[in-house]
Amino acid sequence: MPGPKKCSGADCHNEAGTLQCPTCLKLGIKDSYFCAQDCFQRNWTTHKTIHKTQNAARVYNPFPTYPFSGSVRPVYPLSPRRPVPKSIKHPDWAETGIPKRELRLNRSKWDILDAKGQEGMRKVCRLAREVLDITAAAVKPGVTTDYLDEICHKACVERNSYPSPLNYNHFPKSLCTSPNEIVCHGIPDQRVLLDGDILNLDISLYHGGYHADLNETYYVGDKAKKDPDAIRLIETTREALDMAIEIIKPGTPIRDFGKIIEKHATSRGLTVVKIWGGHGINSEFHPPPWIPHYAKNKAVGTCKPGMTFTIEPILTLGTDKEMYWPDDWTNVTVDGERTAQFEHTMLVTETGVEVLTARLEDSPGGPIPIPDVANGNKAK
Image (cartoon, rainbow, N blue to C red; front, side, top):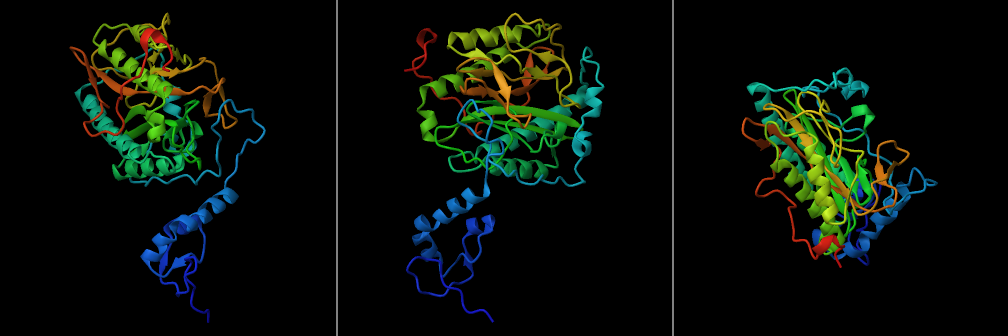
């Protein structure tokens, strides 16, 4: 019969009770028991070094020879795919990874939603805003992007919703997390967020037969909120989206959004990443139209009442040239400069626009003042 366990507290000679360090439990570290809560708290500073040692032994860079353009590295292993109960309606790619219906769409035919469809979009977009806000509230230095994925996934399931990115063209997670130089489609992994990072959270939900899509870029820690270039980048991108939304009404040419976005970006010394654009969204995840975010684009057509679509500009401090990591999803700037993105799902009304994914009064994040942007120069 095994003898009594010794308390894990340094220089503590008591027998351990049933209190186990919750972090050790999560990491699979055994025999990490303490005699009492006050002993655990007193020893926390020295005890937590065990977690770092254990994590260092477990995680790895899956692409050690890849010429990364910036400081961000993938940190594997990825956690197992999170399950979605069968009672929740799944999109057609949930099992196969292939969006078959979407691939068969006529790219020149745009859907106009009736009253029932519009109400379905309102509901799923309200849920998506809730999920983004819950996930964003957990953003802080020291948490992993995989932890944020876990929060997002749980919030979706609690709302009887399927996280649209999960297994879409075999994407392995329930949201996209894109820090710093990652342009978009970053895969949540074991990377720990650092004070000074900026992070985009891209959330999509499927509920009641309709999809919602929105994203925001957040400051990670106080250091990021004191970085003038990070502020200029994030707030200009936020403003560019707001300015594009202001002109939405029946008859507005689709090509005009890019003109407004690029003009504002250029005025602040920033560049539009041209490869990515907005898109239609309704009972399909990415139906037409395609919505460019740069000037002098060739997009055809105009806004019509009943259309639902996204605008989601991505701006960068450097060049708009981008490349992929070997995971075939993570898109990054070739010069390692940071990017920011914001996205809303909109409904065109008879008189203007309804922003279906609009921020709430208590939504995390939000704008902060931009330091010295006079004449489009970099903040000093």
